[in-house]
Amino acid sequence: MDVSFYPNYAKRFLLLELVSIVFFFFNVLTYDNDFSYVWRVLIVLVILALYLGTLWYFDMRYVLFSALAFLLFILLAFVLHYYLLIFMIFFTDFYRKVPIVPTLLCQQALLVVTHGVVYVVAVPPAEGAYVSTVLFPILIIQLLIPYVSRSVIRAKELQRELENTQSQLDVYIQEEERNRIARELHDTLGHTLTMMKVKSELALRFIDHDPERAKAEMNDVLQTTRFASKQVREVVTTLRYTSITEEVMHAKQLFQTNQTTFKNDGIVNVPELSDVIETMIAQSLREALLNVYKHSEASEVSVSFSTDQQSFTSRVVDNGNGFEQQLIPSGNGLDSIVSE
Image (cartoon, rainbow, N blue to C red; front, side, top):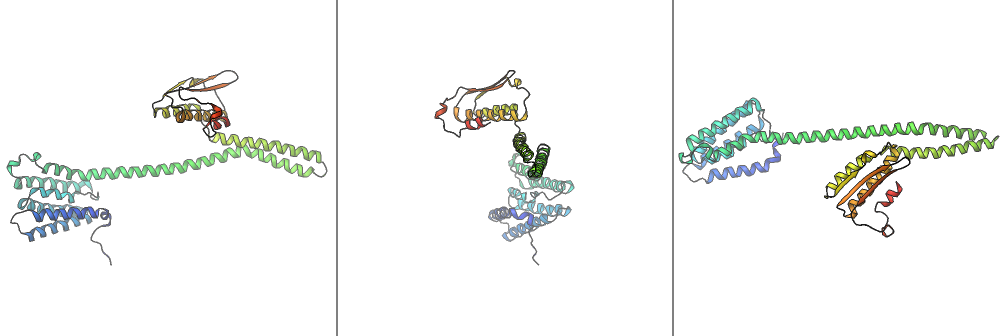
C-alpha cells in the first residue's frame, strides 16, 4: 500500500519548501561556532519532522508540534544566531488548514512568546529595543501570513463563485430568450400559418370543379405568404431592438476613449417610434458614429435630432476629414446605413 508522508494539498509548493529547507540547513550548518554539527543536523531534522506533523493535524496537536519546534528554535537562536527565527515561517499555516479559533490563535500566542524569549536570551543589548531589531518585521510577517493567505484564497473563491453565477445567469438568459422567441413566433406567425393551411386546403378542394375559386384562394395564400415574410422581418428586428438613447450614450463613452468632444442636442426630441423604426434609426446612427470614430480623425462630433408632423431627422456632424462619396469603396459602413 502506497502511503505518502507528504499531503497532496501541499505538493504544489513542494519545490518552494525544498528550497527553503536547503537554505535552513545551509544557515544552520555554516554558522561558525563550536556547537556540534551532529546536534545541528539532529535539531533541524526534528524541526522538519514536527513541521510534517503540522501538515497532517489541525487540532491542538498542531499547537503541540509548533510549541516543540519553537523550543528548538529558541535553542538554535541561543547557540547560533537569532535570525534563524525567520525559518519559523514553516509554522505559519500558509495552507489555511488550521481553524483560527482556538488553534491558530494559541499557536500565534506561542509564536509571540518565542520571539520575546529569544529577544531576552539571544539578542545583544546593543541591538536596542525589540522593534529596532530584525525580529520585529519577521514576527509581523509570520503573524500576518495566515490571514493574508486566507484573504487571497477567499477573493479567488468569490471570483469563481461570481463566474459560476454569471454562467448560470447566461444560461438562464439564453433560455428566457429562446422562450421569448418562441412566444413571438407563435403570436405573430401562428395565426398566419394557420390561415395559409386553410386557404391551401380550400384551393385543393375547389381546383377540379371550381378553378376560379381555387385560384382566388391561392392568391390569398400568396398574399398571406408575403405578410408572413414581413412578420418574420419584424420579429427579427424586434428581437434585436436598439434604443436611440442607448446608442447616444454608448457613443458618448466611445468618443471619450480618444478625447473627442461629443455633443448631443435634442435627444429629448426623440418621439414615440415603433420598435422596428427606432431600431433602424439607432443602427444607422451607430454606423455613422463608428465611421466618424474610425475614419474622420475629428476632434468634435455632434448628434442632433429634430421632428415635425411628417418626419424625424437625426444629424451627425464632425470637423474631421471629408470625402467624395463616389471615391469611397463599399464596405465602410455606408452600405449598412443605406440598408437600414
